[in-house]
Amino acid sequence: MFTPSESPQFPESVLTAAAHPDPYPYYAALLAYRPIYREHRLNLWVALGAQAVSEVLSSALCRVRPVAEPVPAAIAGAPAGNVFKRLVRMNDGPFHAKAKPAVSACLAGFDLAHLTAVARREAAALARDLISAERNSLDRFNFTLPVQVIAQMTGLPPDIAARCATLTGDFVRCLSPLSSPAEIERSNEAAAALLQVLRDELRRPQHGGLAMHAERLQSLGIDDLDAVLANLIGFMSQTYEATAGLIGNTLLALARDAALCPRAAGDDALLRRMIEEVARYDPPIHNTRRFVAQDGMVAGEAMRAGDQILVVLAAANRDPTHCARAHVFDPDRPDRSSFTFGAGPHACTGQTIAIGITAAGIQALLTHGLDVASLASPVEYRRSVNSRIPLFGGAA
Ligand code: HEM
Image 1 (cartoon, rainbow, N blue to C red):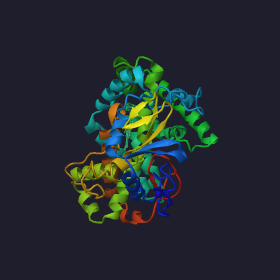
Image 2 (cartoon, rainbow, N blue to C red):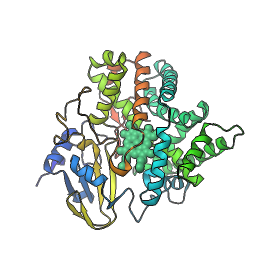
Image 3 (cartoon, helix red, strand yellow):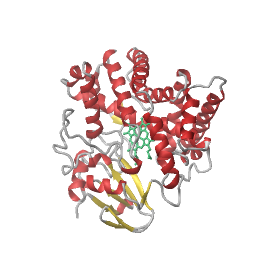
Image 4 (tube, rainbow, N blue to C red):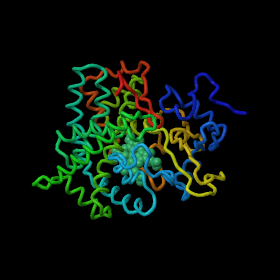
């Protein structure tokens, strides 16, 4: 029987692969075995092939949460759970059907020129601090910039946006199965604080940009104010880890190819193509999950209600039947397509925003003289089941 996990250089399992130094040969070996298979040891289906991943993500039998546990037990009834249960990302059915177009229209309404200007300004300020400080403040840069920009784009003033970045870091801990009870508690406190920040801002006598976005979400179909606030927090939490990882993995790609750095520094279009290729080749999000709601065929396999599927987006990105020269890093590839931002009804609505913030961040770091080559030394990745976020010095 095929047992790829016995190879010493492979990760212990698909659940530790995202944070492994090089999980891609392992994914390739699994994919060569089967594009979708049952991992009995973990009681999971694992989908890795491009076709299988597409079919799972668009299957009418699959849900984003287990039917019996719409909110993780650890946070049900607590502030973090009350935000979680209203997120478009965590719902299917009628709520998702009305909330998704509202969220998509709201994000599509962000003025990209303004977003670039805000991102460049914030990135320059953070980069100045960083260059004069320790190496590990690069982690702070990567985690802070994306949320600061999104919070300002939703109409929050810069000082409050900075606070939101810290609170969001605590809030997202509730999304990881690896979190400790103390981290869950901090996540609940952060959720309550984020809700309070948004409510206070909405109560301000002068109607700010936040009120405009909240009213827009309501007029587009999310009529309940609690759901509006939850999804505004969702903009920040969806941004937080994934965009930090995209900035970090782009820095690593630059560090590993000396020729790319000077080219990317002076060519914004090339830099964006490079970031898109990093998103395909070494993505910040490696997998997501689906839960089978009723017995039936999913991606050609007979599944049972209650089955869980690990959808390995990062493996599908390198499926040779989907992508030519899949294991080659090529910013100029003409046929780029990837699963990093999902697919089907739950596909990400923030791709353009994430790439814009990442480009502004990298540009600022290069302009302020970050020694990119020094980052090529082995890095650790943040402990995570689904994300791949390099840490350049110390835990974040
Ligand atoms: C590198 C950055 C990002 C990556 C890799 C990423 C990836 C993803 C993925 C894979 C999904 C789908 C999850 C699933 O189907 O299970 C998703 C959903 C989503 N993303 Fe992103 N995302 C990023 C940044 C952002 C940003 C900046 C925003 C908004 C400001 C955003 C907003 C959303 C929303 C609202 C959803 C839920 C869509 C739905 O459930 O219908 N994302 N993202």
